Amino acid sequence: MKLLAAVVAAAILSIAGATPAAAADKFGCKYPRVCLYLKKADWGARKPTAAYQIKTQDFQTLGPRARHAYAVYNSRRDDAVLLLLPGRGRDGGDNQICVGPRKSKVLGATSKIRGVLIVDEARCDRVR
Image 1: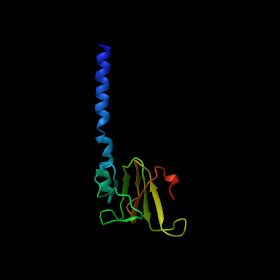
Image 2: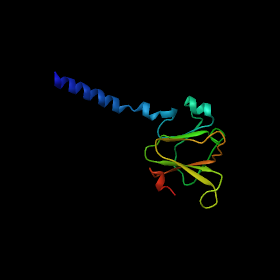
Image 3: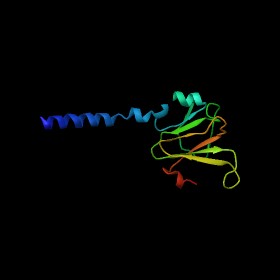
Image 4: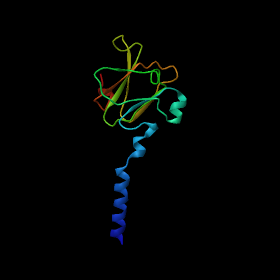
């Protein structure tokens, strides 16, 4: 009887582990996307207004449903994302904010986010 219970428990765990749908859709953002939420209401409703998933060499220019986003969620497992904001960065140019894998960042209603860059690095402290 104990052996049967152990086999059934193992089967249930393997089925539950094989379908990570709940984790994949955290904040309404499907893996492997970087989701942006234009307004506080979009963030609260967990309804992304834009999503990016392709790695590029340079920052991707944002469209009107992402530009000035209120919040961002990075559903990727091994890649951080850099957000480009105008301002005083370390070199006097634009400012960059890093959002690590499976992390979110609320930028606020006055955000001026202009671009996203998905980088092949899992830790923000190792990015640029």
